[in-house]
Length: 144
Image (tube, helix red, strand yellow):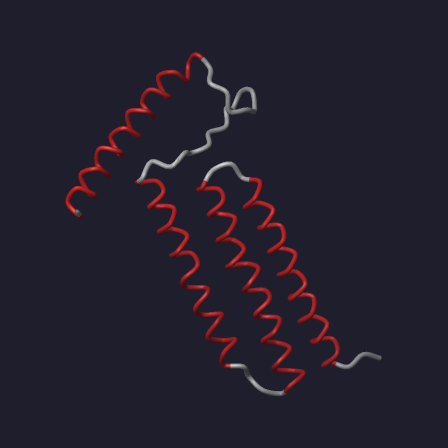
């Protein structure tokens, strides 16, 4: 019969394994997604979900197998939980402000081709990109 410590070690190992699987899936998402916003989303999910699962599994293992609380693991949990979403948001915001390409999927056909109805939207999008480019030039001119 398995003891409580063995069961908890198994749960910790499953959590570490699940964190690795989520990190792998997220890495595939970073490679396969088409624009910077989707890639940032995948990378942020990896750092919050996968790393958190892995570190919680390690923390549980240290408590029950080794018999002590790992302060470094606790600090890493708190630090990653606070900084990863904020960092992803700031990078996304910077990409949006600089006019990065944003993938738009057509709801009718399932692909990103332009329809006749989308021409006005495309013109509006181009105007927004040009406006951002002008704003960028003004900002960089002030910095020089």
